Length: 294
Image (cartoon, rainbow, N blue to C red; front, side, top):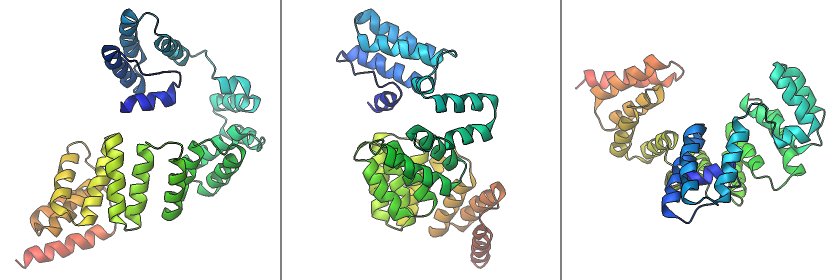
């Protein structure tokens, strides 16, 4: 079950129950845990224990939830690593400069390098992010999340070939990573390798179906030239995502299908929602001219 895989990353103590009923309860509890609804999760974990009172994995999971929800509980890492402990203290104080300088002072620590890399990547300082990810990978070569971070930085730097290569390495540790398949799909799309993009996004959606992946799938279909199918998918997505990008692609699909009136309507919505894409106005005017000449 897909969500059990995700939970195993959060709570690695858990194992899958052989009992079909308890497995269903565990799946429900897992889903609640993912969304932080721990009290609801505990209800179903208690139901499992009513059926299997000696289920040690479920007992351990309940203990883990208790530790996670207890504000006074310290993580093992922050309790055992003095540098991380000090950095966490500065973070709680809101002192970002001291937090970063504390981590930077311990450049031989894997966790210091990894946390710095994550911080810089999330704040779009790609040079520093790559520097610290590379240091982290040398200090702890088997920590797979470092390779995912490196691939994300490579992607943001438009090094799509490098990103795919790094993601392949990441997948030697995480063969069923939907994130890796989706990022590879987007990299291949940017390289105009549509067939590879399509096969990777399909694999990602088989593992975990979410709106981000469905949006990428629709974009790939557009670039493949499957305008009817792409248009249908964008239309469905527009019920939940009213963004400039969705309306832009709907308009482009309409344009490719010679439905000029609908294309203008959707591109107009895209332009209203965002004026970042300077090509939209010229495309809009081009379609308007064609419609006027009909």
